[in-house]
Length: 212
Image 1 (cartoon, rainbow, N blue to C red):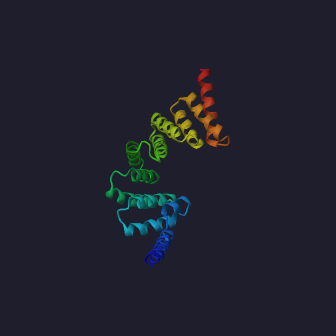
Image 2: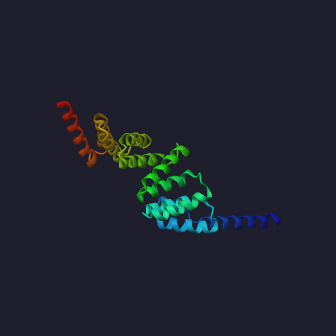
Image 3: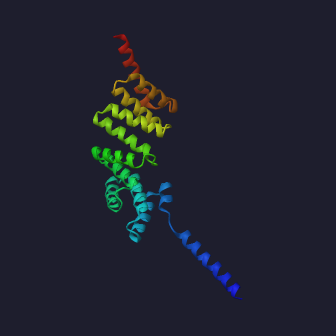
């Protein structure tokens, strides 16, 4: 009889626990499925329960960025950084938010810090891509070349990035290397307008050099 009661208790207990977990909402799953506002709401609820939950802060900021709310993402990321100043995920979030808010020097500092703290991090390719874009804006074309070359090393199947690499090399007047980058972009995406235009400009520049 005791064993029977225990068995009944166990069944009821595990059924209850399973129901509770089934009702729990997953912020990361909502984010990955494009339900960004839902992810924000879940994370805010999680942070009310545990104000030091770094994972909740990270998903919250990612969702806010996807919604174009970069200032909100920056504010929340800075709050998270007070809890853990070395969380490289938060540092990358701050860099990306700064970039879209036009604070490119601050963004560059944070992206550089991210590459030091997380050289094999999940968003390392994005960090180098944004660094390349920042160097382009700063007129440092050789640095842009290095950053974008590193970005496509980590994410080779990104024709738009190859086109930007070609652009950086063209501005640095490294026309043969620029042509190679544009050709790779077009190999991956023959309809890439920037690569088509850039390749034509580079070919003209090479022809002009040879004619001199």
